[in-house]
Amino acid sequence: MKQDSHHDDWDAHWDRYAGSASQNPAQRMRHELVARILRNGAQETMRLFDIGSGQGDMLAKLRPLFPKAEFFGAELSASGVAISKKKVPDATFLVEDLFSPTSELAKFHGWASDAVCSEVLEHVDDPTAFLRAASPYLAEGARLVVTVPGGPMSAFDKHIGHRQHFTKASISRIFAESGFTVERVYRTGFPFFNLYRSVVIARGEKLAQDVEGAGGASSAAASLAMAVFRFLFHFNLTDSPFGWQIVAVGRKNKA
Image 1 (cartoon, rainbow, N blue to C red):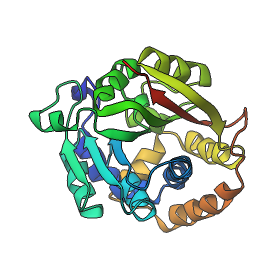
Image 2: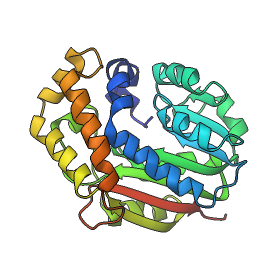
Image 3: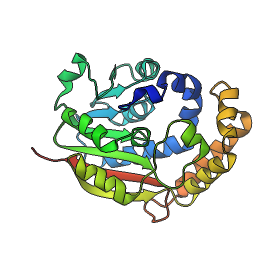
């Protein structure tokens, strides 16, 4: 989901990586972080907009935690939306480019009380413009939770279309320039998420070959390694100046 969609084939992306993404301990870590934030102060009947909903794993995680909530996901990939509808059949998912919205999206103007944008902004050429394009679908004062990568970029990150990684200062600036007031920005994941990322960086371009060669699934050795990291991630520091995962929470400004 980005303004220059010709740069990325997201249908092919989810066809190749859907299986490995669901097993990814980093993704599960981020989903746990988002769930923890939303459970702190969210209404049972919240309306949650998943901005760049991918293959639906975020909302699949949140559904049992918020059984009375309404969920809506917008995603550039038709393949991702098809997978999402199977995972969370009572949510609404639309194939949308926020820079060229369809008429179906209009009914969600001012709809969301809360929104999540997880691991999306690194894929867009102009993150500020992207959040501005998403903003009309949030009510005034709606809470926005964003996760973005910090730390060094790996060859695999570049392979899947990362344009940039972020700092606390850069994501705070993007929030302010796109009409959101920052409530909290912090770095998390030290030390074991950093270690995981270091392994990914060390593997280099071979990681993409590994995953694609396995048809989007993970080998037995990779599955074991990911299980070990899922356990270790429980011992990460939630807020550390050394963490390579950045989390930002803010509110949509009043007009």
